[in-house]
Image 1 (cartoon, rainbow, N blue to C red):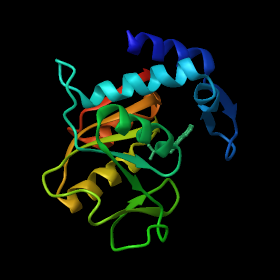
Image 2 (cartoon, helix red, strand yellow):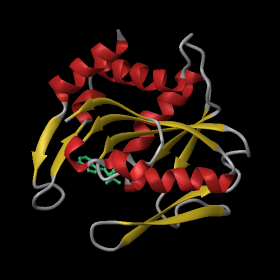
Image 3 (cartoon, helix red, strand yellow):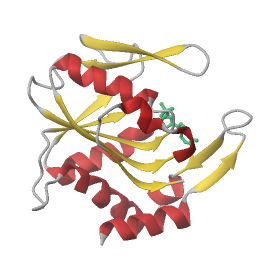
Length: 181
Ligand code: AMP
């Protein structure tokens, strides 16, 4: 039920913004979904289900969100699952010792960081983000979780840009997208 409601909300409310942040990119603007309580609730409920088993029991210890839009979805998913929230951030933003992973962009490279003690060895971790594009961000996040000793349960994402085939960059990671566009 929550999946159908989330899909309806995403289809109705996500806005395509051409040529943002640069020419040729069609930006998926989820802010109208966030601004609508029923839509936001449906999306969070559906993403939280990625961290549950068939009986509806939560099976993850931590939910990781990537800076910055990932935070908006991952934090309420963590609360819904009774799990902790872990921010994965751009370099230099976390104040204590971190693990860092570099990854390639279309032009150049970038890196992401997590606090070394944010995930305890053996903890089960769900990754949540708003949009899956090339998969580079999620792949780097998987490596950060591995560096901490965590076990990645899966990746839940609101929108998947199917034409970019980001899943191919994610190997055998279980990817659940609420909608493929
Ligand atoms: P990627 O690493 O290529 O899978 O890109 C995923 C990250 O970039 C996500 O955190 C998204 O927030 C953001 N992103 C990439 N492409 C788009 C897009 N067309 N619209 C909105 N966000 C995007």
